[in-house]
Length: 86
Image (cartoon, rainbow, N blue to C red; front, side, top):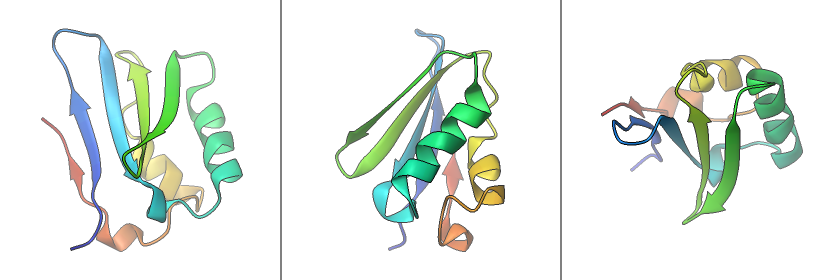
């Protein structure tokens, strides 16, 4: 089964969480640079947990991170990515 890219929204905390499988990230340095370019002044944090990069952003940050990372060529195998929101 192909790894999945997940996006979830929570009602109790004002954060959006993106879970990106590590094997989809071409180059970690470029990945972090793309996150900095994308979020700039917005509040965000990224950590590696259970084989995924877990990126949390504040509620006002853009949620189209997957598209932006694909356009920058940071993610590989984007034809297999599935974005799930709950």
